[in-house]
Amino acid sequence: MIDIHSHVLPGVDDGASTMEDAIAMAQAAASEGIATIIATPHHRNGAYDNPKSSVLPLAAELNDELKRRGIALTVLPGQEVRLHGDLLDGFRRHEVMTLADTPYILIEFPPDHVPKYAEQLLFDMQVNGLIPIIAHPERNAEIIEQPERLYQLVKRGALAQLTASSVTGHFGKKIKTFSFQLIEANLAHFIASDAHNVKTRPFRLRQAYDAIRNEYGTDMVYYFQENAELLIRGQAVFRDEPERVKKKKFLGLF
Image (cartoon, rainbow, N blue to C red):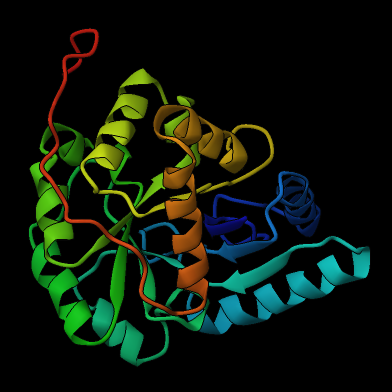
């Protein structure tokens, strides 16, 4: 399996604190069947800045340590970039980076809303040859209340990545239900762990794929897994025509 979103690099954000923490995460990933992982430390989110120049050597150092210890996991460099007005300038200055040196870039919104300029900036990114992937939209308060926001962004070319723990229900029944609604509306293109540690925010990627298999069958699992493979090769991923979310009542939450 391939995991396109993780906080495995040590000492740079709210993920692994030390190299030993990173090794423990790597061992957990490998034991779950993950062979390739993209390290995506937070960048420009207000608390953390991790420019490309610092991410690349850290990823190389972690790969060297994994090889030395015989852990069968490859770490590729990336970022989880908080959407900000000078993002494209940062990319041109080689501070903002894509996932694994591909056209794909992982974009994070603030947890409680979608910035008003998001639609225009995501479009401008595509004009400049980038393919934005919206990280964990199922956990964004505004998108939960107004899924039309995500529909419009995907309709205009953005992609979306759901969190494994959302799909498994570890973030609550409401977010699990909403995650499945996004899958059904063709508003999800990747499943990734967003793992931060081995205890409270582990990988759960295999568990998520099992939940998707139980709900939708094996073809849907292949869809997400193949998209992750296409991403790290820098190729076009599969995407079906997006649909508007059909809200269902769920314990009075919708």
